[in-house]
Amino acid sequence: MKILLASQAIAGHFNPMTGIGVRLQDEGHDVGWYTGRTLAGKVNELGIPHYPFVRAIEHTGDNLNELYPERAKLKGPMAIRFDGERIFAGNVTNFFEDIRDVQRRFPFDVVVLDNTMFIQRLVAVVLGKPVVSVVPIGNMQSDPLVPPMFFGFAPARTPVRRIVHAGARLVSDQFVTRPARTSYVRQLHNYGLPAERGKPITDEPYRWSDAVIQTGTASLDFPRRNVNPKVHYVGALLPHRAGAAGTAATAASAGVAAAEGPDVRWPTAAGTYRRTVVVTQGTVDNRDPAKLMVPTIEALKDMDALIVVATGGAGTEELRRRYPQPNVVVEDYIDFARVFPFTDVFVTNGGFGGVLLSLSHGVPLVTAGLNEGKNDVNARVAYAGVGVNLKTERPSAAAIRSAVDTVLGDPSWRARAQTMGGQFEAEDSVGAAVEVIKAAVASGGTPATGV
View 1 (cartoon, helix red, strand yellow):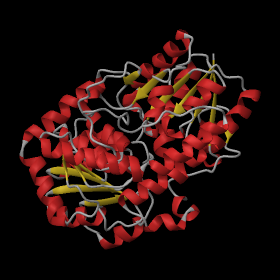
View 2 (cartoon, one colour):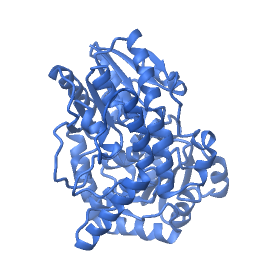
View 3 (cartoon, helix red, strand yellow):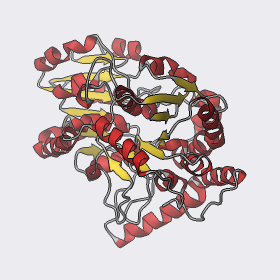
View 4 (cartoon, helix red, strand yellow):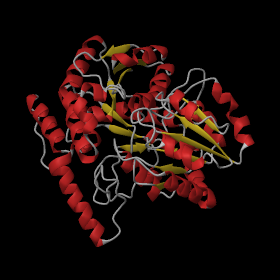
């Protein structure tokens, strides 16, 4: 079977699919990968032929503000509005035309697609090919019981909260996501495809895919009135690591690369202190360490705790000079899979890959992040009872210390995280994802009705 993987050139979207690509190739399938040129080296390391973006604008975690200088000034709903229109919807035709060209050189049988490319309908209807979407973030499909996206809400428990959610949903539909929806509909019309009114763009991958590989577990999602039978929760899809087998041995969280070398000292260092706390701001929103890394170090540096800081490659040397204490270890990248078995609390801005990896090791969290949908991830963490959500991207040192003390002082936080971790351990995530793909192809049809 010829299988084309297609993803954004963003690490958090590319990395979770790497294990799938390698497993499919190991099983004897002919695999190709359509993604940005900046990832050519990584694709080649996997031994998979690379089909680079040609028309598509290559967005990475590092170049967004360079491509769009005005974006750096936007926050909250305005930032989401901008990203939805320019970064995601704006590339739909480019992605599709590139893939149509790839088909001429690599006549694929199925496309395994990063859900945020939003070309599921075009591939299914115009090309007539089966589509399997991979969702590297929380379940985005709308539902009457699920809060509107991008506001960081938990499910409404009172009539007043339901009214608030209805208002927020209206604001989202009419203002926040409307430019992206308008752009997407215009591009569909260029291919002679109608667009139903009232359907959010974020629902499109769930409607027009034959199957959806959803990272995470249902227990980390909010309760739903309508269960989509196409959606298959597969646990944590972690980046493939050469020479290792299975998801337990794969490397770091999506969006934060692994590093070999210094990590071998973590078990010894962790044993020197009563507690171990890991902190990261990821690899996108990490240019200002004062948001989370600095206040976390300030909050915990005098504890009997080893503080492991993963900067994502930004400001590492400056933080090392500022905090020379022996219990503060600052690295560009760390191998979380090695560190988390010795970790008591993970302090994070809410990158979904890091959250999943933390929970897969039964490590409870303290979260502090709002942008790029992280507030929705953090709301799920709090709702599941596996972490404390500080509901800000600039928490004070006092707030962080209080949250960490709360998690450490009550064993029920770790107990709930370990219970969820058991759900991850019970599944071969990559194998489950591969089975979803094979079953979708075997079913033999495309979801022409978009349900």
